[in-house]
Length: 325
Image (cartoon, rainbow, N blue to C red; front, side):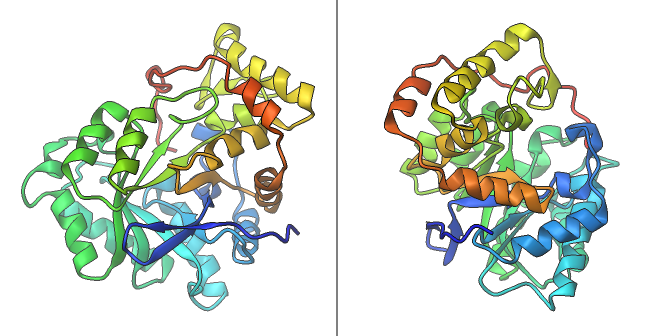
């Protein structure tokens, strides 16, 4: 087991401090349509048991990950250890009704109630409104007495310490960040070695002291397993031409004898704007591997070379056919 500490960073003035590396649980609920493999409940519970040993202190989930199975498994793990541990941070999300796609004031309240009941907790540390790009009517979120107003009300009631926005599409997200006083944001797949679409938004958020949780630094797996072993980028099969930038990264990594996953993870972790880098985990081994990568000593010459490579600033999921499962 790795025995090293991780730096903790504050989320505004909320009293919440998260480690610079955090773990996500979308695939832990088993989402084969997205990730291409299944995760058994036994394996999920083993992974969660390892998480509670530290040193990572934040676990992120969502009401709709694997249609509720992610939170259900977390709830089982929490019961097993007799309640959520004091020194750990629990994060979940307000989600649309998956049948009607409605995300309004009423659904916001119902979503958090479902989460608290499923995970057997009476509050969470971080609460995000999730994926507004997929809702039936985005005005249900933004209007007076809508989902955002209700989200902030939940914070006032003490059901969470910090509230934020978690989503992908920058063109929808950036204006929302400017118009609401969020404590924290989660954006995924848009600040990696391959893509920097979130860069301007991160500059703005950092200037406003909004904590930034950068999710999916491995671009859906290709920057963890390497393009020689994995042919998808952001959950999509891609052409050899689109895989070429990842091959260039892989080539430099091999020259320095550095695993591509370590480079991808530390690219995010070394950015002063980023409060925590969020990586999905599905096994004890994946936890240990992330800790190993986070702790690897990477020379400055490597960064000088890798950061000269071209990257995309376009939406990496523009052509993705999204299936929630």
